[in-house]
Amino acid sequence: MKIKISVFILCLLFVISFAGNDAKAAQLQNNQFHSYLLKGIDKAFNLEKAEADEYLKKAVELEPENPMGYAYLAMLNLSFYEISLEQKDRDTNQEALLHYAKEAVVRGEKMIKNNPNDSQAYFAMALAKIAKIQWAIHQKRYFIIAQETSNIWDYLEKAKGGNSQNYDACFLMGILHYHIHNLPGFIRFLSSTFIVAGSHKKGLQELELAAQKGDLLKELAQA
Image (cartoon, rainbow, N blue to C red; front, side, top):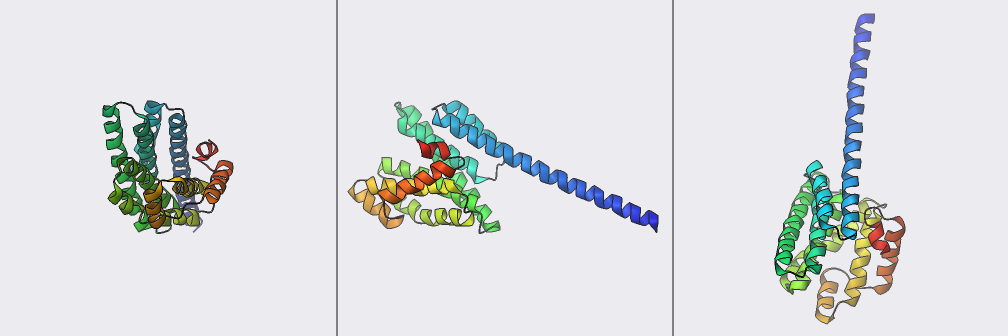
């Protein structure tokens, strides 16, 4: 009997050990993923596209089903699409941004099917859609603007509601409130109808909150 109990205890300790190791491995992977995103955003902020692209792609390689890496790659390529002077570079960045925006939404929707309250999935989809909307504004693709904005505010509210500490969501909310308020006539009307009414005051308040308490987008909010 004592031998059986000893064997049982050893087996239990073995299982607990493996479970602990799995949890530690998952935490390490999550920390590494976050680190890659943070480094990629930092490089993008300093206009170092190649380095930013490398770090964000490392994040995608580490967690290929996580929509966050794809969403930030979409935003990276949007940024360089907007500042590129050569048409060839603009075309390359445009193709990449549309591809990564699509991948982010596809993976975000998969995550939400498994967990309808996944705040990070909603946040990633909102980020990807904002990238595509901004591109559509440059292109004056009004149908795409209307199509992509139909549920973006709902995504952001769910991202914030699912995690009250997600102050990066405040950054996106602030950007939308602030910039919609300052858009030209027809686009402002369209954006206010399908997303949310613009507000200079609300936008600045949300940006200030993100600048104080944000995570990946804290420095961008401060800027």
